[in-house]
Amino acid sequence: MVENVIWPAALDANRSRSDGRRVSLDLAVENPTVDEIAKAVQQVGYDAVIERDKTYPREYEGRGRVVVKDADDATKSDLLGAVAAYMQALRE
Image (cartoon, rainbow, N blue to C red):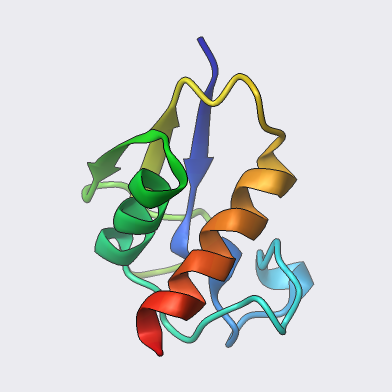
């Protein structure tokens, strides 16, 4: 059983790669929330658990994180790309 953690910083267009963004700028969205990320993860086809009390190590304020369960068939990069693409569709 593989668990992947998705921090909002990984999808945030306001962050640089060195600050924690993991997707390209054309896939990134501004100020993603854990609720949006969890919804996108579920639409991609995986189970998502929101942990609101967690803080990304490079941030001062806690935005939480999303734990993706049973993502055995996808790499983290593929998962982040699919979630980011779906989040862009949600915001349009």
